[in-house]
Amino acid sequence: MGRVALVTGGSRGIGRAIALELARRGNAVAVNYHSNEVAAFEVVDEMKSAGGIGIAVRADVGDPVDVATMFKTVTDGLGPIEILVNNAGIRRDTLLPRMGVDAWDDVVTTNLTSVYLCTKAALRSMLRARWGRIVTIGSVAGISGNAGQSNYAAAKAAAIGFSKSVAKEVGSRGITVNVVAPGFVETDMTDDLSDDAKAAAAASIGLGRFGTPTEIASAVGYLASDEASYISGHVLVVDGGLAL
Image 1 (cartoon, rainbow, N blue to C red):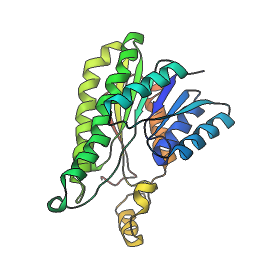
Image 2 (image 1 turned 30 degrees about the horizontal axis):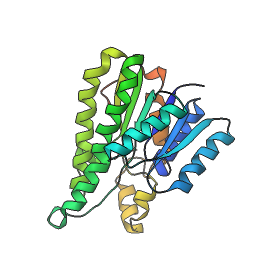
Image 3 (image 1 turned 180 degrees about the horizontal axis):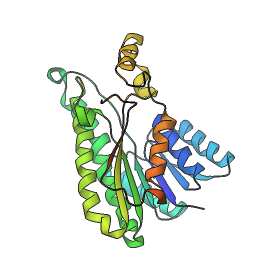
């Protein structure tokens, strides 16, 4: 068995692809989910069918009690967590004058507070082991901003600053902390866009198309590996040339 990995929001989309990629690389993977239990266990079954090791664990990653329970469950079931992928995220898009406090708080809690809670919990065992990989899924919105996503962009931008700061704190203990910032990716989060909006978005991308979850997962798999041992505090943009 390789390392023990935890992927938050691992039941669908990018998170699912990351969990499968980490399992393919020989790691035991805990798939976190909040509400979609069926999808989470489908990911675990797929990993096991390919000869991998995995478990599904429910938790609201924005809740400190849930996070503590999740880490204990994973540690008891698989061992200390050595790879953490902070992937859980939601959108509540609207222009700022129409944005209610709930839309702000929900996005910041799920997309940013969860990163703080899970990273802090993961560091306990990583610091003892003097090895660890933390990869947070950001967004190009956190770099360049996006109209109608001030809450989402703010949380993703803050996650970048958080990751760079933690990278400086723990680098001497063999722990790397990085961010993968996707552009438009074919997931449930982009399915609600109209055909016209998708076409306009694709036209703004250098490669002329949306990315796939697998393409994001490949970048995460690399950063979570031994091969990326000298990369830390980095934001890897995987956007097909959107930000050019």
